[in-house]
Length: 111
Image (cartoon, rainbow, N blue to C red):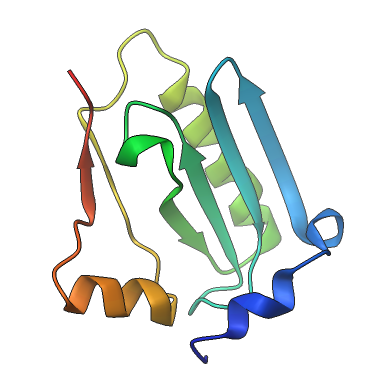
């Protein structure tokens, strides 16, 4: 896993996509990745967390687990009460570097 492995994911999202849910300002996206210790991940984008930027919330070993995880996160994020925080769990080298230099990894819900 190298720091620039994410570049291999450009222009091929359709081939890597597992599931995508969009409603209002919420996006829950699950896809195959090349810059992580696991081959699949779910990311959430919502204005209440991380200034509306992506938060990677779960990693998976198989496509089947990724689909189940995606469905779980859609359910969590579409309930009446959003979680109080989302924890960034990405294992990409860029994320690991950010954590090492003190960047925030737990994104509390905006009040």
